[in-house]
Every structure is written in C-alpha cells, then in structure tokens.
Image 1 (cartoon, one colour):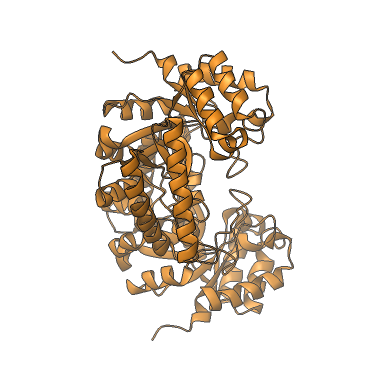
Image 2 (spheres, rainbow over the protein chains, first blue to last red):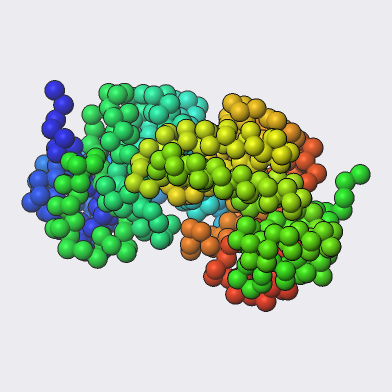
Length: 277
Length: 277
C-alpha cells in the first residue's frame, strides 16, 4: 500500500522564501502537516547547516531534495574547478540534511559564449567529475531538465531525452532525474521518456502550473489548478513506473504567492495538491 | 552562384509595425534596398490586399512568406470550421501577394483545455484539411515550430522533430517548415532535424536573437548579434541542405526596436544581417 496522497506533499522552500526564513518554513510545514521539504542552500546557510539539520530531524521531515548543485559550464578551467569544489560541498550538505537527492540545475552558456554544444559537453564533464564524489558519499544526483526558455542562462539540458542520454552515458548508479512538470509539460516526448527513465532514474517529482499568460520568465509560476498543465496525467505516468516518492511544490511567484500570508499559501498548496496534483 | 549575402535579407513587417503602416514599410524596404518582405494579414488588410500586392510588385519585392495561417485547435467543430475558412482566405491572399509560402502558427490549447495531445491531433486534422485547399491553389504551407514557452497559447508544435513528423504523415507535396532561430536555437536535435528536413521542406529561414535576460515572453526579441544565438552556424546548416532562400528578420521588441526610428532599424537589420546573419 502506498501512503495517502496528502502525505506525499513536499514543500520546496522557494515557495515562501520572501515571507519566512528556513526555521519558520520548517515549523510551518510541521504545523500544516506537510511531511516533506526541499530547502535551498542560501536558506540553509542563513540559519546554519547544523541547526537546519537538527530542526528537520526534530520535526521528522523527509527531505525530497536539496536545491541545488550544478552550473557546470565556466569560462575557464579555474572557474570550473571552483564550481566542482562548491558542488562537492553541496553534496556534503545534502548528506548532513538527509536529502533524498541533490538537485542539479546544470547551467547554461558561459559568459560571452554562443557555443551551446560546447556548454553541453562541459555539463557532461562536470557532472561526471561530481558523480565520482557523490557516489563515494552515497548521495544521488538528480539532473533537472529545465524549460528551454532557460537554455541560455540556467540549464542547457532542456528535455527528459537529454537527461536520459546523460544517464545512459554516465551510468545509472547514483544518477537520475528530477521531473518538474513546469519544465517538461510541453514536451511531445514526455510520456515515452518517462517510460525510458523507469523507476531507477525517477528521483524527484516537482509540481506547479503554467499560467496563461505568463508575465515573467522566472517568477510567475502558478499554483496547481490555476494553469494549463495536466499534472494528474503526468503524476500517473511517473507512478506507472513505480514512483512512490514525494510531490514537491515549487512556486516562484513574485507577482502573487510571494505577496500572500505564508500560512494561507501552505493551506492552498495542500488543497490544490489534493485536487490537482 | 548564389546571390550576395546582402540580397538575401527579407523584412518581416512586424519588426517596424509600431512605427509604419505597410505602405511605408514597403517603401522603406525599397529605399534601403531590402529585396524581400513578409507582411502580416492585419497590415495588408489596413491598406487593402490589391494595393499591397500592387506596391509589392511595383517595388519588385520578393515575399518570403505571408504571416500567417494556423491556430487550428478550437473548442468545437463550428470554431474549427470557421478557422479553416479563414485559413483558406489566407491562402488566397498569399497567392495574390505572390508569397513563397503561407507561414503557419498552428495554435495551442483550446480555451479551458489541458489536453495537449488532443490539441496536437486537432492541428494535424486542421492542417490536413487546409493542405488539400492549398495544394489545389499551389501555395506551399510552412509549419513554424514555436518555442515551447508558447505551447499553451500559440503553437503546440514546438520542435523541428514534430514538424518533420507532421510532414512525414501528411506528405511533402506543398508542405514544409519555417525555421526560426529564435524558436529552435535551444534544441539539441536542431542539426539532425534540419538534415532530416532536407531542401524540399526548408521553406523559410527567420532570424533574430535571444536576449539574456529576456524581459518579456513575447515582445523582447533581440537584434542579430545582441544575444546568444549562433545564427551563422544555423544558417550554414540550412545552406548545407541547399537552402538559398531569403533570411527573414522578425523582431518583436516593445521595449527597444519598436521605439526606434524605423529607418535606423532597417539600417541596423542590414548591418547585423551581414555581420551575424
């Protein structure tokens, strides 16, 4: 028997980052009986790693992912080496927090570059180097394909197919995919690539909605049910592969949800997850 | 021998639509020795179809495409039938203008729908019906894959692969693809799908640039050279298939170019096309 649907909700802490610090978010999750959380590195640093880990354990929260590693491409070898070292620290932090995976936003073009195939090669090389370290520590790495509108500045891995190809090349041991409906809902190959990924690669499932119109490329994500994504169908696709992990709500919303009472935001996340997640 | 590079420039009339009406744009092209144009239906309607055709012939402009048909999905059969009739009128207008193709922005989800596979089926069906009419008149139809950020509201055909699949299914006779670097530059399969399309399907080539950051999903396109797209590499890819058609500049830019002196915009288009196109 799988858990009840309501217990599968996890809160990505970016969703209320303008209103609360990480301590308040953790306590908010506990108060609203949200059983999972996915914190960002800057929020962890603000209250301290040890304290963050203590609070998460105290409230018995699962950590559906740690946000985030990646950003592999760099202008030169020195920059890429610094990124690798920083990513290794992120792996260590993820281990300390008991995260189920380290989410990777792989990075886009280095400054001044138009060489997208080259950037993708740098992602492959950087990921390969980090994987060695993460495997030794036992922290799974989750490649998150980002929407193509972020190809220049955030992630040049933009489809599940690309992520699956990377997993094929680098090996499945300790490597998989974070599937975010916001980034992948448009993809005509979504369902076949979910099947290709299979249970072993499905490390995380992120939900929110695509608003029409979308007024900002980065910070106008919608609450589940307010947009056009068939979230239920996409969830059923990952569950058909055996996925029983958490459903992580991640909403960047400068124009709406970041301006709301955070307790109301959490209540809304819970209700909408049940109705549309 | 192919024509000199400078003679391959075509101006999509949206590029200066806030400053000039179609008559002024045609005369501007003639004055700046831009030998091709791609007008929009609303601009043609504003000065009258016959007058638009007369001016274009008078100035001996090539019409690299007519913008635009498509928008096939609809809430019901009646809506889709009305769209088909309107698309047939667009075919007639394109013929009158001597356009080299009718560009198709195929449409997104019908209002209230989350059924993306269903919308894609409606695109296939609507395109199939229009193709019969267009073939009889001898007007090539160019499917334009749009960037995935427009999947909900403008076009649910978002990759060259999807466009090639449609051409495979419906037949190449009178059917092909409009390749726009803005919509396709991020696609890891761009080069292989251009090769798959081949000369017979490459009906149009549109250029502009992707700005980082992009401040508006619709109206913040960049002038060639101001962004991250390797336009030259993409042009060489279509030319490697034998493409010798025009290079159509199409820039929606509420925040910049639409506020500039249109003669300066045309001069800039010419210079940037030579340097970066």
